[in-house]
Image 1: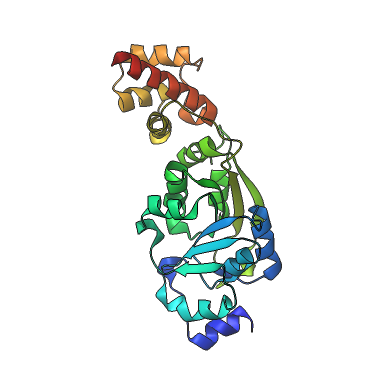
Image 2: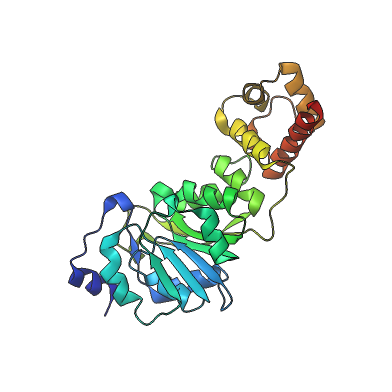
Length: 279
């Protein structure tokens, strides 16, 4: 039985507030699981089981899949679409409210794979970036515009705070574009799959909190220079901000979006060092 028939037979109603747009193309779903690097040794954490099509594709490759789903009305549908899978577990609760430290302790090392609705994309990604100590990487399907922001390079209009935050853990790559015609119901925009490997491609910083503060400052007021934004964020005098940028070998008058994530990391390390020396 096809997914559309299962949904119609159950009387399921799509809920706009949850951004529900489901995929059912088996070849595409298997390709997304492959894009994510899922193998028979992998534990996968999925955010948003939906109708279970991606969950099944992941479970057919993974050692274990734990999926969160906020919509209880999908329970009977998932009982059908995931029938016979002993390594897939759906937890009907809000992932954003879970005990994240306890979940990581339970899962051990894991990969995140998800078809994320727009309204939770940034907070979910940032949770793994900032708190995911055992997360080996994320592969998420998001709106194409969001994918371009996640994978943007410095100096481009799409480059922003979320780009720089994610790059510290692992540089994101757009690995697949997904047209809107493959979703039920059809959304108004196309989507894309983004992968970020947290075990390679990132960089370390002396103090993650200082790095986050520098990133926020860099993009807080795009029309202002980085010098002005640093003054406001770190209570610096203009002379102190100028001296800091000179030490970081950053040109005077530059704006935050011109600096690569690594350059922002170097700047953060200088600030952290000065804070430590001042204690």
